[in-house]
Image 1 (cartoon, one colour):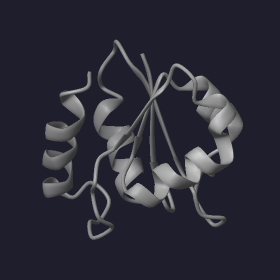
Image 2 (cartoon, one colour):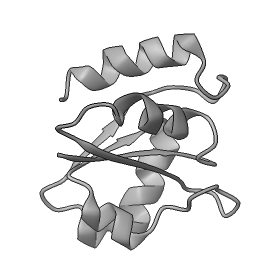
Image 3 (tube, rainbow, N blue to C red):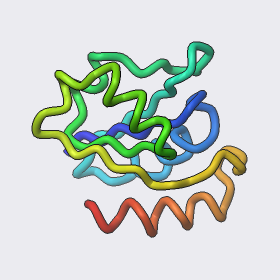
Length: 105
């Protein structure tokens, strides 16, 4: 399974998720951001690559649907509802990610 995590800037939430879930050898994991200044900007290639896409907030889901609607057939697009209030690798963020993501894997 190929998993893509998306947040705004790809510096805290989605990057934490990528690091956290990259230890699963049955999954390939990447992350990206929707903002112009994102560390790794979401692209059509990343959307096409992913089997399942986890967005941190509803605004990310909306942006992905607006820009890449033609690439979303047969893909799961899930909102995790994780606000932008955590630092990279925050322990509480890791717990929330484990709890919310594992139910889909």
